[in-house]
Figure 1 (cartoon, helix red, strand yellow):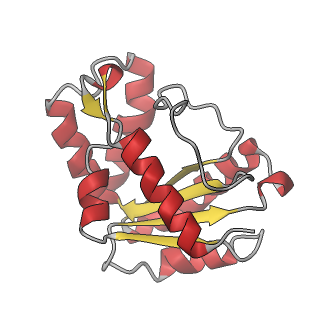
Figure 2: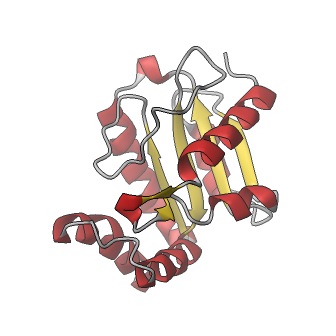
Length: 175
């Protein structure tokens, strides 16, 4: 079972060790160039999922608190849901979230992410895995993405990856 204090500590360590370190495949930028500032400014809200149907996650979306830049929703019931089911649910959540200028993304412990950052160096605090769902403002995410685009962040992406991940998200904001 996840403990909120340890979970926040682990996520902060993961961000520091994995997301905030420059990587060659991202043109020597961190995998998540804005993560450190977001953590340092106390703009991250970590939530432990309370039910496997994610009604509490939907509440986080509907009642998004702009005190934070990102909500990280974590669930330890990952053995009850496949990586494909997590992706399907995220797509469904985005149908509602995008109308509220929010974007939902995340991964299951079994998700294979083609442009994922290297995590071999990271040693977690929990023995068991959990999935992570990230909720953030869509327009702010697009502006941040456009900013790192100018710095060459996506130069190693092929055209299909760029279209599916970046351009499709930008089109959501144009609607």
